[in-house]
Image (cartoon, rainbow, N blue to C red):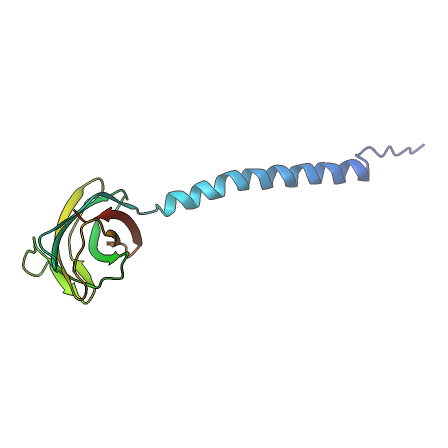
Length: 163
């Protein structure tokens, strides 16, 4: 008497177990992979912590822009754009310019600066109106584009009024 006893799991139970294992692996990967990629690529950010514009006369104003590095890498380059609500074109000239650090680039000022993470810098600009007079109370927008040492880019903007 050779009786062979076949013991094992049914096909239905095997399929259900396979699906449960697949879902468990998928959930584990879903929770681990985004955290892994976020740790590899930290987002670089900046903040404009202060922005003031004071009219000197009807053709010239002085703007001060404070920029803070909120990222994890050094900033190597900053480009500043200023626009008016009345579509006044400004010629931007750096005031606190160290030789070779800030220069005028048509409607923008480009500064080669090094701002470490968590540090802040202040840049003063002279705005010369290329057209209509500067009017106290005009709404002005400053846009700052920061380039980090890893070539990533971050932008920030602020709105202010001419005093």
